[in-house]
Length: 207
Image (cartoon, rainbow, N blue to C red; front, side):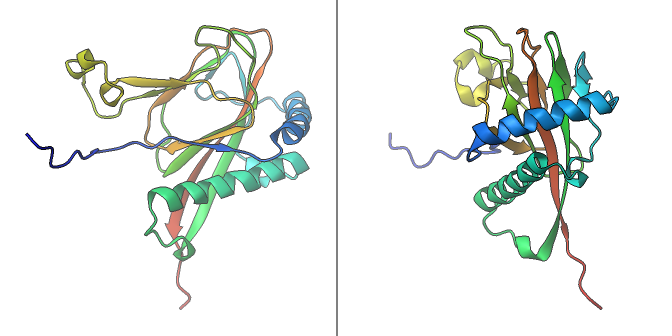
């Protein structure tokens, strides 16, 4: 028989961007982030055994963080243009929030999503090298419900989860509804990441 079509229904995009001159930026970010951690108590959200800053990343004035925030804005817009090319970005205001995660050995993040946003992301400042195992991996959980029978086919399209260990200098962007968690850091070196949420709101017209 002849195939008429194969449609990929309900796709969930996960995008990876390479930040330019990341090595220089990361060295500056690491210094700034360690100074912030030393000066602030942090908060507890999904983090376990690690340090989590408040959500005011975009209000900070450290030069490295300001440069990273510009890259976050660029990836937020780029992801939107790629996935929703007909969306009128100029008719909307962008609302962004971000925070820092410092994960020493044994630290991890429990499964969660980011409601009331369209895109979420994570930038990797430091990522300890590993030869095997799941240390440093972020795992995305299938949002479609039970796939227990379909997983028997061992096809990626029917997998119940997807794991990736991003390299330093990588910016991940994914839909905010997508459940995810971060595996425990099994290395003695700290893993440092910057996470963020973004959403567009219709711009108010002048009366």
